[in-house]
Length: 286
Ligand code: SF4
Image (cartoon, rainbow, N blue to C red; front, top):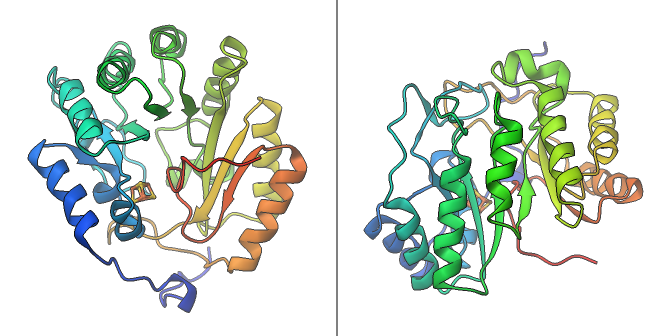
């Protein structure tokens, strides 16, 4: 493996920023005791997203049962799901008058349904409070319970169904030791088979040491399981304990990936250095 790259290129220098709407989002999250992946993943877009009144809520606690090496979320033994959390997420949506809400969670391999029932409860609670609210669920791979989890989630439709492959299969051993590329593709495929009208979405990070050919193969694999949407962004080391960045990909290369993804038939594509799976998720594309 090459020597890790340390200096941030100019196109990745961005101030976190703040403003009245950023503070409003931060206050609502803190008042309601809710967690976000924005904070847990040390996301560089926080200033921009929170200022726009969008955030990605992290349900089911801030402790993950896995230990992906690109992620800074704590790992260990999580607490049981909080039965009051659906109400608080609903209250956040109401208070911020949200139109679009992305909900994600840590991996909950300790729960028999992988946390699917809690996702469903959160969506249903929010929808009762704000019927027009649209949802995007970014779910874990539901290791041993994919069929059961999808059956449960079916009751919470409609939503965009997201599950991230994160990186190329050759890097799973190093970056995502608890994951399984084929299992992730299987989940996306099952969701599409069950709910053909539901938009499915995945995301991957570049800069972990993958080759262009490997990325192209992932895009082909995603299309082969009917995946409609893709987000491609630059991996940025979220903490000192995380994997180093192997390469900074220039913005023009991200543009080239966007063009290739569209040519393959993805109907919604976001590809730029700052793209994250939830970045501008509400954006409508032709
Ligand atoms: S891109 Fe997603 S994770 Fe990052 S700040 Fe925006 S909503 Fe949060």
